[in-house]
Image (cartoon, rainbow, N blue to C red; front, side, top):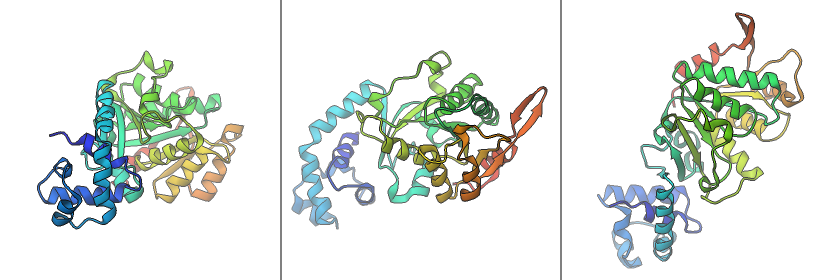
Length: 310
């Protein structure tokens, strides 16, 4: 029996986070049961069979009240071809669990090819007001990554992110877009429609399906972009804001961090030097290929391919 609606109902109970959900999952799995088997039981019956806290036991009663609403939500998501990926699913990105522990989101909403979420991937991030040079770097960096079977992970914002996604699609590679809003608020940008291959694209959100984009959601999204990546390339970052915070997150999580080095930094890259100085990011410099100066991604790709595997 599909127990997704039961997990959704539990997830919606106030005060029940990933630690409690993990405890429930481990307990029912060890007993050879599904979480749905506990619905309809009295608190006394649950207490007799499991060593749950009063808070968890009470949560089942609250979830029971919300079960029909959770079922409606689940059916609506299925109609929209959205997958609900809980922390115990083989589709859930293992790097999120390893790096974030109980700070990882308990579930993700995914549209597209959700199997990409565990593919070897690297982040390409940059300011939405990226310079023309930065947009070119994002585009060529993404093309280079997918030529080595590395998925491009980014945030789907205009500018550097969009250039990276488009380049990956055009080059026949895979790309994962983390959203700063709920999956039901997502519409595919016009820039990607002409090049989209659904088998090579996944949009993913950790937010409630109808949540709107805001600054806090963008910051938390950027942290998940980094945590799900084997390495992070900050193409251009101002000296404050979401992209700079993404670099800080990568540094705190001990993820290989890179940023573009310029001879003359544009305003949209005013934070690049700070990222190198404060967060020990490695510089990505240019190399001549024919008559073009291309980003030298060799060391970055080596970190993805042969660095610490998480």
